[in-house]
Image (cartoon, rainbow, N blue to C red):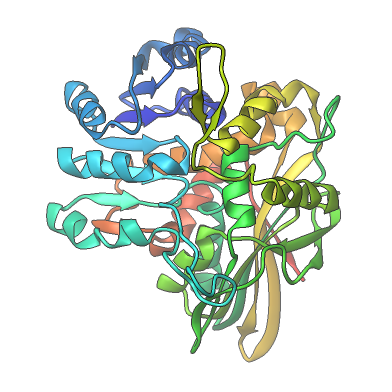
Length: 406
């Protein structure tokens, strides 16, 4: 398999380090707008980097991406850029006949009049609108194939296939006890993406009602996370699983809640009140005259690079799917989960836990596609494929998953 990886940030770099250890990969082109980042990702692989090539590309330039796919005869485009670039990359892959895989879907837009009651443009709507074209081309766009969404959707499919007869609720629950020395506010993932998902209206799915929205940070609950993390307050956050899981899993309710913490939520609210979450450029004075800049990009520039926090980070992160329903006529609740200890991921891969946990899942998916264990055409999420091959291979990668009866 020949892969074009677009994005050599924290997740992209972790992808290269994981993929370098797997024999299924024929060649990977690592491309980034900043060629130095791509070159650094490849150079860090040492002798394992013989199957990797660094390149420069602007992810917003569909023609340039298409040319890179064609030049290197890539079978699949793996998108590790932020969600702003989903559609040009998605279109470039389709236009050149490549398969496509991402970890976050096309952006949403709140309902213009009732943002906290009704959905406007939902996450992934722009991609699913093109599904017929992908089907006609016989190509697969595997969307939302990170950890959340991604592994969380695989867990939902596993629960439906093997653990439950009827499912009342699928609830993705994410929590951690990570701390970062020397920083009071240091997100462990892209602040651009974090602001987008946390301040947009969260979506909930209910059978008979469909998709609807709530206020950000609504319905707080305390969830007890495994492997020593313990109780963490979780709140509703906009996320792809709520839009994806109901497509292939029969559940009466689907939710996503994230353990953010009071301080984190308060900081995001202040950013929103000040307009610093905006993506539309504003004019600010510069040494050579006025400059147009996005407030959200300024916030991102003022914070430490999440990929560089690993040496100062301590603790574990947990991604998982809580499922409630019945089995053999009896009530049942389980929590299917994946925990990564930052000390382990730094020692084994030199990557902090959150980016490594995100990165391992698309690599597992690529291997399943390369071997034919997963196959399909159209625009599909992870819940559309059999779960057992994925879960077995994830364990074979040295990062087992767990299940707790609630």
